[in-house]
Image 1 (cartoon, one colour):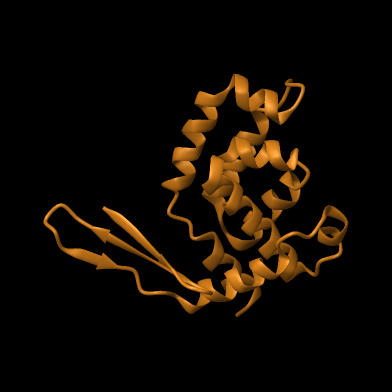
Image 2 (cartoon, one colour; image 1 turned 90 degrees about the vertical axis):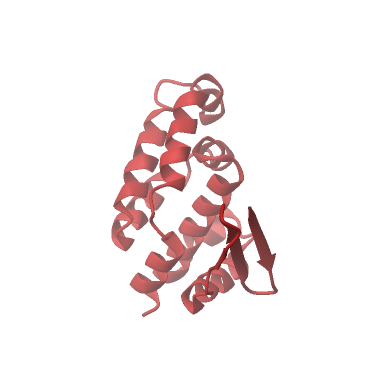
Length: 153
C-alpha cells in the first residue's frame, strides 16, 4: 500500500510492503528547492516563459513535463502543450543528464509525426504512448534532483 502525506512545501511517501513493514522516504531538501521554484512559476503564459532565465526555464520545463506526465502521460503533455516546449525540453533534459527521459520524449514526439495534432496522435496511438509512459515511470531518473544539481548547486 502506498500513502502520501502532503505538507505546505513538501510531500512524503510511505510504502507498506507485503510483510507489513514500512519504508518512509526521507525528504530531500533539493526537492523542496525545486518545487518551491516550480510553484512560483505556475500559471505563467508562453510569453512570460520565453523571458525566463536559464535556471527558471529549466524548472519550468521540467516541472511542466513532470506535472503533465504524472497526471495523464506523455500524450497529455504533448496534447496540452501542443508540443510548443518539446525541443526546449529535450535540450534541457540533455543538459541535466536525463538521457532516458530525453529519449522517451523524443520518441513520444515522433508519434505525432504525420498526425493532424498531438491530440489525434494520442487518440490513435494510445498503446504506444502507454508503453512510453511505463518506461518514463520506471526510468529511475529524478528530474527535479537533476535540475537542482545542474542549476542550483
